[in-house]
Image (cartoon, rainbow over all chains, first blue to last red; front, side, top):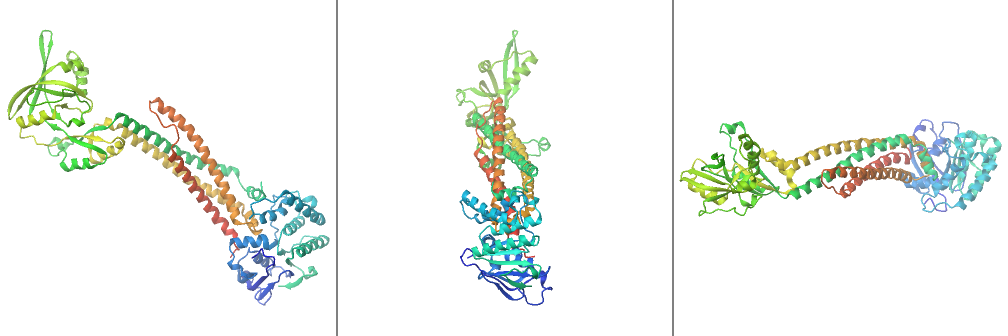
Length: 231
Length: 404
């Protein structure tokens, strides 16, 4: 289902997160039937506390505290078992979490390489050396553009938050995905790095024919080519 | 090392792990050693029983104060004898027949030109020939013969030679000499008086009675028997099965009987040993329970410590099965290590105890008992599955969207 060439749409069917019942009295993507369509790019803009991270949590399956139904493709995610969530997270949607969720003891390279190992978990054969080398070259290219190439051999806990954010973005890009879900991914980046990063993201999404859902605080951060959604 | 292992290893606390494992190791060693030693000793005891052959016991009821005042009855009833016969511990049961007439034996020694006479009342008994430990060739009697073959207890001749004779200045007598001596046996009863010759034909270790052939006893009781004696069985001789001595011991104690307990020593030792070793095994079991729960606690703690890592791996799409598998492999490795070291230590302990056992002239099996090894492996398997269940419970909680 999730491995099919056609990416699944993500549909919010009358979803309202339980903590936000009092906050959202009117229809938005909450309390209505809203679908994120395949291959489109969406930018969710809202002030703090309106539920941006909640949307990311709902889509990535880390939060279940909502009323209504989440449909991934044609399937109600309430019916997802452990296996489907694992498949969805490893093949379907790639995420940049607001708190990044990098492994502090691992190096940048190891963190970025981890999703490939996770995607390989079902198969018995190991990822070959040449594949690793090829991948490493691609990652090096990206990292050089983002100015963190000389940091990738260091353990994450030695990096600044902005550097960590760039590592997290690279980790999300360095894998197969049908959706790229990013929660305020540029909050600690300067304008130059932000525009480099958004170029990388758009290129990779295009080449993988994937959809993007990105949240931001301010409407001035609106990126061209993205459909604006205010919550 | 792959990245997953690198991530999950980070949160292990080796010192805590080692102390938890050490507890499991020690508890396990106690159980393993005590059960192995128990099987060893059991083998030895059974082996020595087989070497001795069948076990014959003379049992009687305990004499209490009531018996002294002629109130209690110390004879076995027919139903009691039937019960003993039906007990699977015993092969066969025999009654003693006692004399119902008065009998006296006398013998004269020539000492310094005079004769010294020893005279004693006789308490004769007969028992089925099957229960005798010796079969002298003169051991038969019929009415045409006036010489009665007698079997004396070995203890009697020892008592005479080492206590009575030295004190009285009488000569000590060898067993072959005493067989040459001629006794006079005088019998008095309803049917009149008779004098028989008595001839000692052998010495019994098994039965501490003056034994005469059953044919004689039956005849004499019929001719001379006094009516005041009735036909009761005060003592029984039983043949016990080789490997049932501890059960025999328990049965005799339960019924309040007494036995010539020397023969039951092996059974008693086996019981004692079993008690001691079960106490050790009991403490071993307690230790295992405590240490297994501490191992579970350690694993729960380590999962809690790894909560961020596990949650993040799950959020990145790592399968919870793989994480549980990772823990399962590690725990299996640790337990297998415990098992292997335990077996090595057990082999060492066994070589030591075997040496000790051999100094006592016994022989213990050279190899470890298969059942001990198998059952301990089974216990480890159970421990392992407990750990896996604990891991499952914790990790499942993290794998689905949080409802609250």
